[in-house]
Amino acid sequence: MDSGSNNEATRLWRVFRTAHQMVHDRGYMVAQDELDMDLETFKRTFAPSGDVDRDQLTFIVQKRDDAADQLLVFFPKDKSVGVRPLRVYVERMAQQQIPHGICIYQSSMTSSANKVIQSLPSRHTLESFQENELLVNITHHVLVPRHEVLTSEEKAALLKRYRLKETQLPRIQNSDPVARYYGLTRGQVVKILRESETAGRYVSYRLCI
Image (cartoon, rainbow, N blue to C red; front, side, top):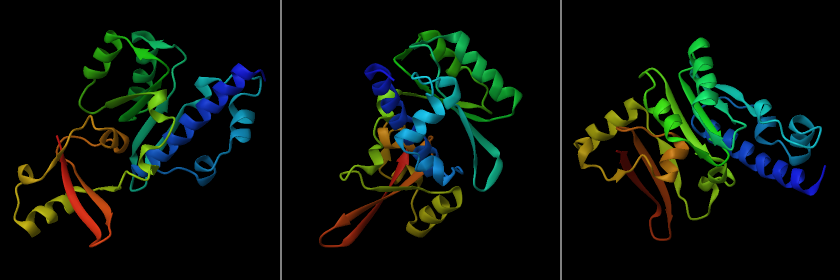
């Protein structure tokens, strides 16, 4: 394996690892050996001839508490993703009744490709991340506090306990990097736990808008 291929494999291994950590943190089932995969195992599995085959990186996961809630994660080969390759994956989601998808692209997505994402029927959602955004897991950074996404029941209980309307909660944009990592949608509430020298642990809540 030449140095260029080796660097690319190392880079994609980091992206692949973060993608698995991300969907695991969203409540999807991920095997421990996939979370712990080291670089050499990644190279043997996905780059036996030197170059990584991005088609082989595609994986499907399902929610721990709902087998029908599946997520397709894919890595298009094109540096700039257009309509044609994107539609292949969208059609696969429709055929296999997979409601959610994540496109991890190399460099860019055309405006036409973004329009395909925006025009999906409400029963399907498709997110996109550039590979560079997943080289490191931002939630593992020492300055990023722990986040926990509340269920609908937990959100209702929170509002009832403090006699609040959801609009009274502090807000977090759905474009925020941490919100994107957890796949937050408008109306969801995230619990944020920060360590405090005086209080021990400080808890706050944010409404995704």
